[in-house]
Length: 366
Ligand code: ADP
Image (tube, rainbow, N blue to C red; front, top):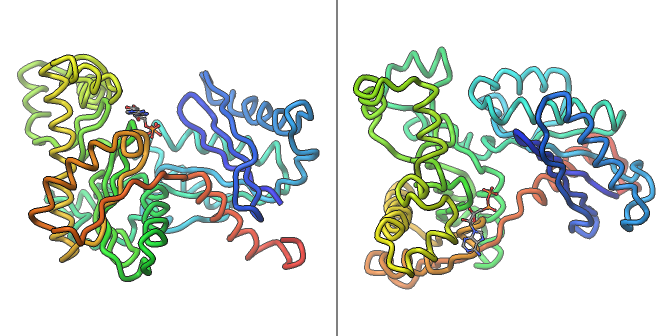
C-alpha cells in the first residue's frame, strides 16, 4: 500500500511516494517552473504519469495509492493536527490565505488538482503550524493591543512544525528516553531557519511568528528586528510596505549582511578566504542560535538535548560544535548536542496513513 505526499510551493510541486508497510520512500521528484494557478492541475497529471511509467520502474496502477498527504503551511488556530480534507477543511485553509499568501494558495491548488485527478482517494492536510498549537498564550501573544490578536489573528504561529516534531521523536529514540520526559530544543536550519522548545513532547515556544520572518537569521530573511526599523524605513527612505517586505524577506539575512550569497556553502568558503562580512554573517547566525538555546532552556526550566537538522543543520557540524562548546560551561556534559536528519515527507505519509486507516481501511487491507 502506497501513500503519495505532495508539497506544492509557489513555483513547484514536489512529490514523494511511500510504501507504508516498509515505512520507506519508493519514488520522488519535482515538477518546477509552475507559473500560474491553473498549471498545478497539469503538474499533478505529470506526477501521475511519472509514477505509472513502467520505464522508470514505477507502480502499475495509481490505484495502489490509498491516500494523499499534502503539506499545508498555515492552519492558523483551526487546525491543531493533521486533518482529512473535506470541503469545510478547504474553506478553513482558504481562511488563512491572507496570513500565508505565498504558501497556502498553491497548496490549495494542489489539493484541488489531486481531488480531480485522483477521485475517491482520501486526502489529508498536514500543517506546518499545527505542532506549535500547544504553545501557552504567554509565548504566542505579542505585546500589542489584544484586539489585534482577537480580531485579526495577529499572534505567533510558528512553522516547520512537522520537521521539529519528526526530529524530536527521532532524538528521543536515539537517546533511548521517552519523549514525554524530555526537554528538547530543535533547530531547523535550512533556507528558512527556526527553533522550537519541546517540553515533554509538546512545542511550548518557537522562533518564527505570525509569518516565517521572525527569529533566527536565515538565508535571505532578517529574523528578529526592532519593529521601529519598519517605521524608520517608511519615513526616512519613503519605502513602500511591498518594498520593505521584499528587502526583509529576500535581501536580508546571510545574503544581506555578507553581500555575497544566501547559501551557507558560499559563506563558509568566503570566510576561509578571510572575508570579514561573510564571517560577520556566520557569527550572527550562530550567536542567535546560542541565544535561543539559553532562552528555551530557561522557558523549560532545564534542557536535555539540542537537535540540529535541515540543509545547514545536517551538513555543517561546525555550527553544532561551536554551540555545544560555548554552552558547555552552562550545561555541562549532560546535555546532548545531536544532528538528526529531518524527513517531513515521511511524517506526512505516516500521518496520512494513520488517518485513513482510522476512517476507511479495514484491518485486512493494510
Ligand atoms: P529548505 O529550507 O528549502 O528545505 P534545505 O533544508 O535544503 O532548504 O537547506 C538549504 C540550505 O542548506 C542551503 O541554502 C545551504 O546553505 C545549506 N546547505 C546544504 N548543503 C550544505 C553543505 N554541504 N554545506 C553547507 N551548507 C549546506
